[in-house]
Length: 136
Image 1 (spheres, one colour):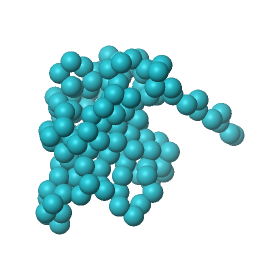
Image 2 (cartoon, one colour):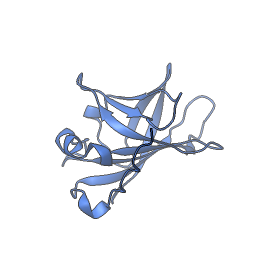
Image 3 (cartoon, helix red, strand yellow):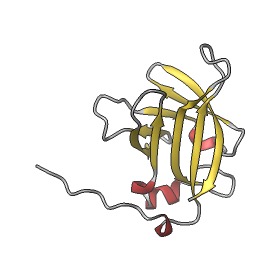
Image 4 (cartoon, helix red, strand yellow):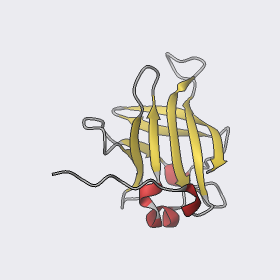
């Protein structure tokens, strides 16, 4: 069974609160300077406090996407997903074998340049620095 190709999402069709957010690996053991090549690019709606806007997410789920970036690896595409328990997850539906990653306390995080957020990747938690937030 084949599925119909997904229609592209036009930036002009999204509410103005949508932002492109870049996260880069912060300093940690093995990466004393961090790593700009390891990170994520997310497209998500932000409220006036620069937190993820759950109401706008719900109305535009398909547009809330994530790209996982790793040096010397192919990009992995996915979606930003909200679970009923209140947590945010990076879900890679097009990459079999790639487990979901947990946005640690994403509901409370301010996505502004210079702030830090944590993402649970398997059994490890990594810290990322928000390096860019821009309008689409």
